[in-house]
Amino acid sequence: MAKNSKSAGDARTRARQMHEKQLKKEKRNAQITTWSIVGVVVLVIAVIAGLLIWNQNRSIPESGEAPTIANEHGGITLVSTTEFAEGESLGEVSANEVGESNITDEPPEEVPGGEERDQDEPAQVIIYADPDCVHCADFEMANSEFINEKLDAEEITVEYRLVNYLDNPGTNNFSSRAANTALCTAAEHPEKFNDVLTALFETYSTHQGQGLSNDELKQLASDNGADVSDCMSNNTYRPFVDYTAAKAREGGIAGTPSIWVNGTFTTQDSFQDDVNNAIED
Image (cartoon, rainbow, N blue to C red; front, side, top):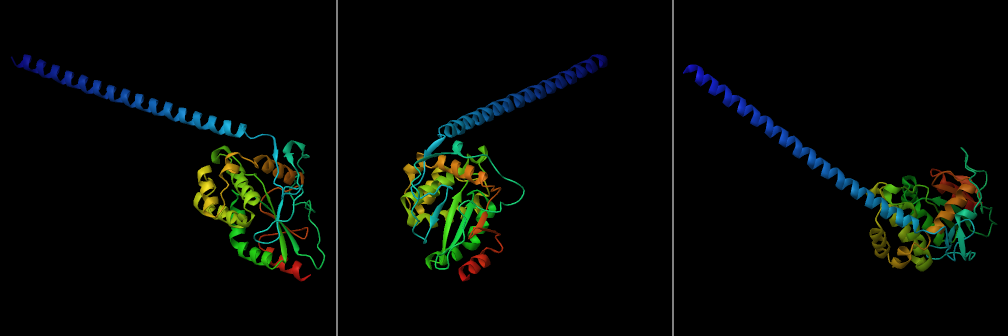
């Protein structure tokens, strides 16, 4: 009788162990199934996002309209905080028509379009900037008030050459999209350009290089008095941004910000002193 009781107990133990083993197997299989589904969903989302970005970027033509206020170097020149110098009416431009890159380890000795100014003329400032560049944001935050003061005093002109060196799929090419926003503003609401450009660089402290969506860019422009939704949606000046970047590389500009005063390269640290010296000289 005792032997039978022991056998029954062993059978129950084995049955319990088999049941627990089965439960663990089912749990493991369920986890595998769950993670497989999650993996598939993530993959599908990534593929869809990639296709959207690819289609959007593929829709950017190789050539396109240049702002009428632009010059052959890809610059737009402020003569006051609300006015631009007359441009060269370039018509359509294409990065494919620009010469090869001349970038080296050192800044070029000369900047295209840079020049000494006569004593009775405002000093010339040229700034190559990328909207997704942290050092460009730092420069703008440190110097925007100084620049505006000198502009309104008619002591300087400031030519912005907006490039897209930091474009990448992770930000959906934010550099190009933000530069297009600024150029749309310059073309359609020149009196608001300074405000929009400063706001673009101010946002860097929030997005930390991750960029803004198109809707956020439109809202930023609108918040600063510029309704440029159609221009932005049509990517009107995206080919021109590519052209400007190609011209910058052709001119040997390796990075941003790259700043020139009366045709002479300057640094962020010495910028204000060099401007003041140019004005005095």
